[in-house]
Amino acid sequence: MTERTLPPGPPSGRRGPRTVLLRGGAVYSPADPFATAMLVEGEHIAWVGSDGAAEAYTATADEIVELDGALVTPAFVDAHVHATAAGLALTGLDLTGSPSLAAALAAVTAFVDRSEPGGVLIGHGWDESGWPEGRPPTLAELDAAARGAALYLSRTDVHSALATTALRTLTEGLAERPGHHPEGPLAKDAHHAVRQTALARLTPEQRRRAQRATLARAAELGIGALHECAGPEISSEQDLAALLALAADQEGPEVFGYWGELGGVETARRLGAVGAGGDLFVDGAFGSRTACLHTPYTDAEHTGTAYLSAEQVADHVAACTEAGLQAGFHAIGDAAVAAVVEGVRAAGERVGAGRVKALRHRVEHAEALDDESVAAFAELGLTASVQPAFDAAWGGPEGMYVQRLGAERAAALNPFAALLRAGVPLAFGSDAPVTPLDPWGTVRAAAFHRTPEHRISVRAAFTAHTRGGWRAIGRDQDGVLVPGAVASYAIWAAGDLVVQAPDSRVAGWSTDPRSGTPGLPDLTPGHPLPVCLRTVVRGRTVHQG
Image (cartoon, rainbow, N blue to C red):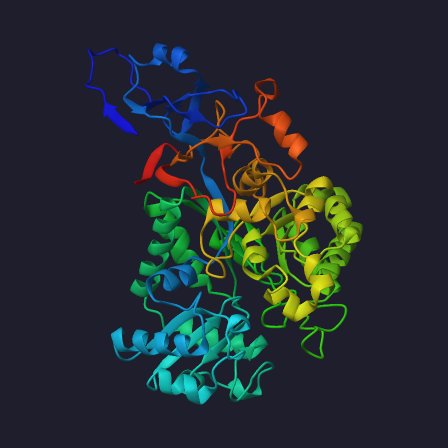
């Protein structure tokens, strides 16, 4: 890819937005499935078409980008992130992929040794389900590895954590809180309390550095917008306000905030959030055995944790609907999903089903769905904000899902194809740092789901990770390269373009030129993923590779 800025011509008497002409590549656009060129004027796309037709714009363009065969697509939208936590993992201690308990403890010691003394240290990503030891460290082992430092280590699902004695001592009333364990991981309220203790001790500069790292990494990966899922139990008002201010002050991905607090309509509005939802917890997660189930876990004699009742869900949805604000909930287990469905339906009976449906209230994660709950999502107009990388990480016959739920229940999780068939809107995200920012990997995970019946086409998955994120916040016109749309796009070195669908008959017809179906990169597992050459947000370049 090459570019040239044209010298100024003679005065024309007209001053308008800066124009950029891209040509000589492949432009992924429903306006023209064979487009090879695109014109951008200021913050918007002005035209898409062929290289031949683009000649008419060369004399007036301020910049011409020679794509040299590169692919141009809408920028991705990650519909569920935690920017500060993700940035701390990027810049600090990330135990994701640690092969054993011993390796994790060694990484903790190395991290402590290179850190400044004093304060609270924060790390993330341990997952005992794949370790040969089959267990997390004891408190004594953790204290020894951390050399007595105050250390918080969230599990990969961020629904339980390890905390050293020094950090526990700083947390008032910890031993009396639900989920406390004197030697092992902390869950439920005990986990929320110790996390707040750790995050409250971040300095403004530490927070800013972490948030900048996340925004920079997103831009490097062709992500043009992020949905930050904040709340009193996952971050803080100060954290969300700082992130929104940072995103507004610097050129980078756009950030849209959600505030997950029961009855938090006024707080959400005061903070500038687009919704009172996100991680408003109805339950926890499978890995920490806190996702709420109808029947007990396979490897534990309980059904998880219910944080909210259907009545509380109804109250929140009704209040948000009356205020004209989108609501949302974190619900993973089948009992939690059922509580959300029951609550949203009850809210519709109170304030009007049409009004509830119009706001496209969200359900985050929505993993354990059956045919009845899928149909209810469609009936109630719910948006499913889902993370395909969860299946890639924990699905399959040897994965954590099977350990926790058994093979039959595990195979039913994350039914993306059923959701699409029912007409349920999908918005894809990473839940970073739970899984890393990785948009093409997310699309691949949905197209090559470990359970074949849940797979969707690459095109449908790509749409869920681009336009789906915009639709989830009511911006139906964005996330697509057509005249008049916002010019947020990415340029990729992508190799051959193909059409991939679960049904080979569909894929075969779609490659026929008569179908007019534009191709996307080959995401077959093992193939290299596309490399981002440039990310543009509202006409401004925020990353150049």
